Image (cartoon, rainbow, N blue to C red; front, side):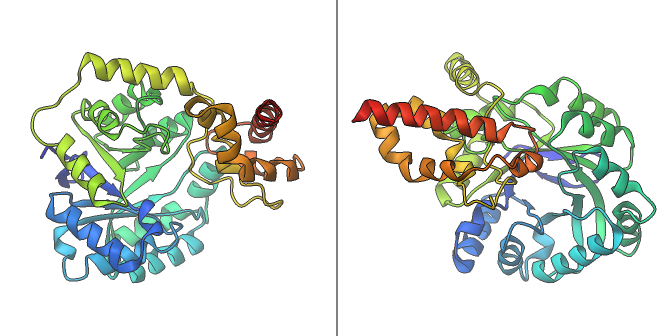
Length: 341
């Protein structure tokens, strides 16, 4: 399998890593078995986060007694020292380990996040101390904002940068990746399937394999997905004219104004099922209007409860105008419902 050296960390790993969000849908034993299968197939880097429900606990179960065989990365969403250290200790307990290979402030995307993180009571100073104590081996950073990611890279304080990159979202390749390489940083790619919007996994992964030095974090909850990822990153790289045409079709379909299903906008105080309602436009491109109404009806009816408070939009890392988009999708749904009568 293709391997990479992760920046200047000294970490050598398969170029495909295991993303820890999807395993929250699995039972404990099932999740542990899947991760051990991934390890057996050559995947050695496993990424999770404190906020991913019971993902850390399942990872700890999977690798108890195998800690020296895997590289574990996790994250804190806290910006202040006290709370970040509380999350670090919780992660160590859940993961059944006394050190984290790569610890990352999670989703640092606003000026306020930045100022607090580096402020007098900010988490950054505490993370450096934790690294000196051996609880953390390397400090990385994650963001969904290109401008902020470039600002964070420019500090020279982080070993790695984790950022979305896929067939549709390619902006990072122009500036962010070259700037990170110039700093000797490792590059971790999240959202390889654009939050599930790219349904051809092989094409999505073949596209990403063209970047020779990035670590692609592939979220899996099925053995078949693990095998597919291993297969794509083994042997010679493949990228065909048919692949390029399919990639362009995804770009034409999704554009830049689409939901990545990260679910940071949830929960809605009014009970609107935001994530699924944001998918309605894509559903209509794959189903007839009548079938789309039948398929998404229960979800779209919850949009009528939206009071336009805007709370969801403030949480969106992609700055999508969520209430406006929900209204657009509801109008489309109502038109389809009327036509189906």
